[in-house]
Length: 361
Image (tube, rainbow, N blue to C red; front, side, top):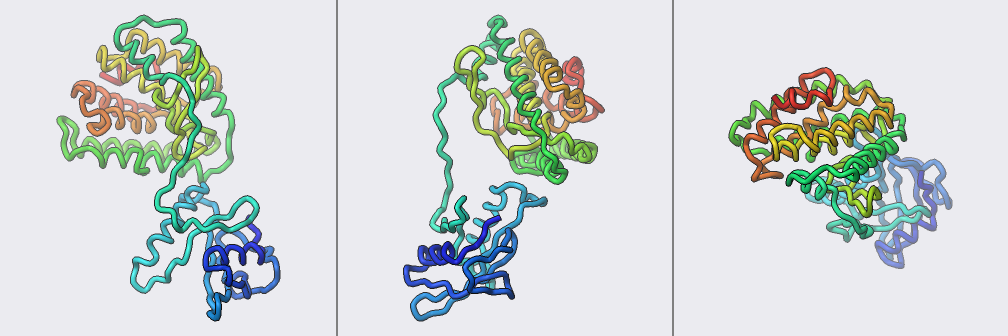
């Protein structure tokens, strides 16, 4: 919890309103104080500031947000809310105006970020070759190498390793299940991105996927002990192999914690996808790698229940791969097979990696 100190507040006011700004008093609404520290301050508690700028005495309210459910678990969630408040308050008639938006530093200083319009992240450059190039090679008919098996095993063991870190937070697990249905990047965002009709893909078909996935959400929402450290977007384009089985990962998404099946389905559906594009079914080297990944992951993690949680995550990833937006040139037959796969997996009580071709029809 940040501790508000008079010096830090005054320095902030001077940086924002000019060097003449002087803090007169501050404190929780109704309990203003001119003392140097207000010990009971915490996120979500509005604090009234009274300060002088030149000859004018001004008052303002410093507001924050507590971590918690309803989409406020992550610092980025709360930052998003504060940035939205600052941008939008002044656009609504009769609404109080937002004067600034800022951050607390690790040393309890307050910094303004009001001038920001777009935010960015600067990442380290990492040499390596995207894992999807291995899959492209196999799809062209090249033979399965021992290295291909070793890389699949390394990826499965990596997931088992990161998923071993658990977190007790029932609200956060339910949120992550909720997001796989309703997040703009997940199932509902994807179904909304489809044309009203695209060949055999109708609104009724898409709605059926949503409804079946939501039934899975209700089935899984009590499995809160499964909340684990995750990558969140573990597909071949986000894995860079440097040499042999040494690799780096890119672009983890939608939070640090989630359901392990999200990562496992994200990678393994790509073995199916490449095989469908080449042969119309799971076979050859892709069938070997698909089964190897599942077997190795279950053995390394001891998570035999993952097959009872995979269905809605396969639906999410299947909607990406069958999407006319993401894959505009995909043959209609492959799209149809992916939808059949999603439908059958959502209808089964547990996913069976040995029955993939049955799910595909």
